Image 1 (cartoon, rainbow, N blue to C red):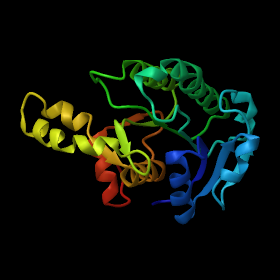
Image 2: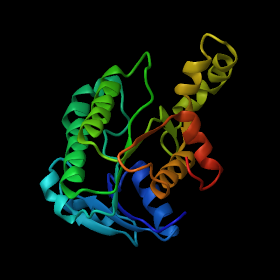
Image 3: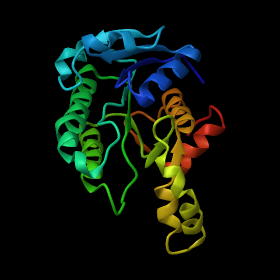
Length: 225
């Protein structure tokens, strides 16, 4: 780690966000978390709550600074094909809001959690996340895009039953690439990869894409991705 970072997190009170906030604070970074008024109590101790609306960039863009890393984690919990309408109502507008706020403030680095693709399922979710990636590219931001498929952790364990099938797909040449691209990652690996992305940003103006194999390697310790 070269220097301590100023980190602004949207979705910081959620499944990944709370764990990421705690990890960043433990490493000495200054963390601000965008939150609705009713969720201020869920912001991790040591982080600064910023009351605002993740769908309205003007509610927090003035609090961003040029040396900030903005981590966008807002999204529909437990995404499934049945939640396509929520992806369009929450996921995409919140991403566009973060991109707009980041561009207005001229921040240093945007970190965005997208999804692994292509894939044979979850097309509506993938389409929305790809639109988010396109918005980042169009804005000309310095960014890191992480593409997990499914993040295992408390309350998110059902895909463990698929691990034997992944092992079979891994050894078959026809399915090996898909198995690796759509592999499972743990919440610890995801947090470690996010911390590494924050601490080691890409070159100014570049967009770095981090796929599942790199996310898994992020669990081995803090190092540049």
